[in-house]
Amino acid sequence: MVAMTIRHEETTEQEAQERQEQTRTKELPRTARELFDVLPELPGFRAEVIEGTLIVSPVGTPEHARCAMRLYRALMPVMDEHGWEGWTGNVDVCIEGPREPTEPDFVLAPTDCPRWGDRELLSSGLIMVAEVASTGSAPRDRNEKPTLYATGGVPIYLLIDMVAAPPTLAVYSDIRDGAYRTTTTVEVGTSLLLPHPIDVKLDTTIFTT
Image (cartoon, rainbow, N blue to C red; front, side, top):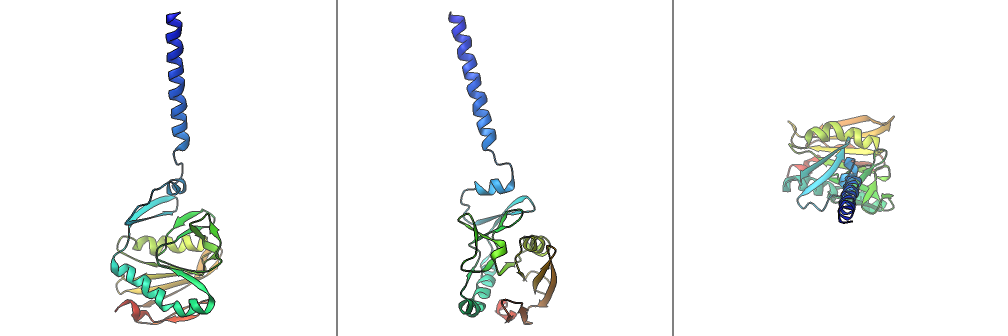
């Protein structure tokens, strides 16, 4: 009887361990999106998913943030005119299709922009996003973000590239077949027309002072 009891206890303990291991396995994130969803708050960092890869990077410098804020101020009249909302780097965007989350440096959207859950604006409901390139983010901002935002149906993508030589601004628009078909690039100091529905000639000297 004693031997039988010991075997029963050993089997029960083994089964419990197996169940515990199965539970842990089920709870592990399987995709970058799932890992993003369970990330804790990361003060001083921002997290995005680009082409299935989770990217965690430090927040920008004061100069980086200044560019986003000056764009916000330049667009305040058109925001007030149309009743739009603007955010500088503190709102997440869900890219429709792959459902990849990003955190642009600037987002322009109508007040009734649809959301994915509570914290993410749906990309197809936006008016424009902008990125301020840094040394670390420039390759993604120049090469990957145009494809990502066009895939998500963002009508206008503005790239403020102060680390280029010479510094430039580029505006991407006219989405067809999942890609931007029109790109206009100017050196900083030259005005740049932000296309419809914004229809504003942006004075790019605001990014140099």
